[in-house]
Each structure stands twice: as structure tokens, then as C-alpha cells.
Image 1 (cartoon, rainbow over the protein chains, first blue to last red):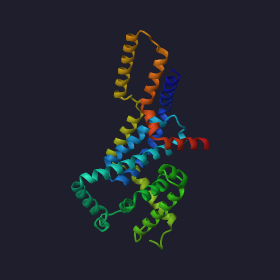
Image 2 (image 1 turned 180 degrees about the horizontal axis):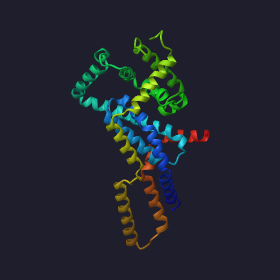
Image 3 (image 1 turned 135 degrees about the vertical axis):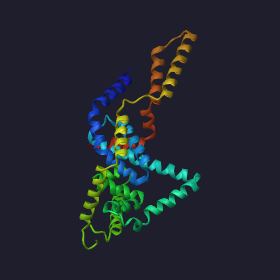
Image 4 (image 1 turned 90 degrees about the horizontal axis):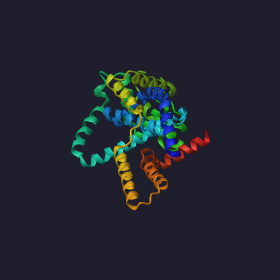
Length: 185
Length: 111
């Protein structure tokens, strides 16, 4: 019975936390969506993953202090992205022909910046360059530069060492510098 | 650009560009995010399968107790509650994310 009461009090705590949880999610959702969309290149799937992360955060960790929510949320989201990528890879083994068409179209869009130069804006060039980054470099860069997490926080969110974060981040910066060289910034 | 702009300035430009694009999300994405938030904040509903399994287990227990005529409700009910707790979403999550929880514990200890 004590356990049941404890569960009830956690649920009550969740209800009490709702206004601050709502504010927290509202403050983070757009950046989280962008970060996810960069990783998986699919708007609807990205929105689904952000929703999953929101649900898991609220159901499992809303009782934790507010200061921990950002890290917990991104930790969950990174796991969601990783799982999605794994599943996509497995799906790719069985639907090769279908994916190959998408892949060719994708390459066409992302690998030839000259094609979109005419109507290009700096915004698009930067987005294009970030999309070219390998996933870990991209996520390290976005969590640090866009979300504003420090090295330790990024390492926690990505479940890797601080050294790895530093390496991923610096490689990402070098790559972006090279890709955006010549741009009229 | 290499000679024109410092790394710090480049990072600032990228950050500003990303911030702007997040603020100017298309209405569809903004709407879906709002819906996602509302869905996440709804009180959690228990899994129907677990509810049915629990109801079945209780019925079975009552039947067995009635049949044998030796009821030990306190002890058996507690066992049942334990089973229910083990089957709950939160605890399955606990089992599946032990490393995540140990991380949580370590950060809480540091804090």
C-alpha cells in the first residue's frame, strides 16, 4: 500500500509540475525539433521523435528537479535518434531499391550546393553544411553551439566522454569553416 | 572567408542563423509541436494490456482462494501488487535503462 501511495504522490507531483513542464517543453521544443530534423532529414519523423522524448520525460522524470530536465530531455532524444537510425538501417537492408531512389534524390539535393546557389541564402548554405556533417559531429556541434550545452553536459546527453565531444566539435567546426569558405558572411 | 572572419564570429553567425530558423518554423511544425506538448502533459494512461492482465490475475486469485477455502489475502495481495508494479511502464523502463539510472544517481550524488 505504501508503494501505491508513493506512485499516487508521484502522479500528483507530475500534475503540480505541469505549468513548469509546459514552459520547459515550450522553451526547448523548436530547437529540439531542428536538431532532430538535421539528424534524420525527415520532418514528420523528427516531430514524432520529439513527441516521444517529451512523453518519456514527463512520464519518467517530471519528479526530478527542473535543472535536470534539459539534460534528461536531450539524453532521451539522442537515444531516440540513435534508435531511429538503427531501425532505418535495418529497413534499408530490406527495401534497398526504394531507399536507393530516395538516396539518389537526397544526394542530388545535398551534395551539389552549386545547384541551389542561385536562390541560395546564407541560411540555406549553413543548413546544407550542417547536414553534411557525420551524425556525432553534427549533434555535438548543435548541442554545444545551438542549444548552448557545455562540454560535460553534451557528453552526458550523447552518452560519450568529454574528450569525444571535444573531438567531434572541433572536427565539425573545421568542416563548417571549409564548407562556408568563400561565403560572403 | 578564412581570412575575413574569426572562428568565434563564424560560430556566432551560425548560431544566429539557427536561432532565426527555429523562431520561423513553418506553421505545420509549430502546430505539431504544440500538439506533442499537450499529449505529453496529459495524465499517463496505463497500458490496457497490463490492466487486463491485472484484472485476470485478480479474478484468478479470487477463484483459487474461494476454491481452496484458505484465504491469505494480505500476503497474496501484496505479491500481486508487486507483480503489478514490476509490470508497470516505469519499472520496465528502469530495467531497460539501468545504465541511464546509474548515471542519474551519480549526477544526483554530485549535486
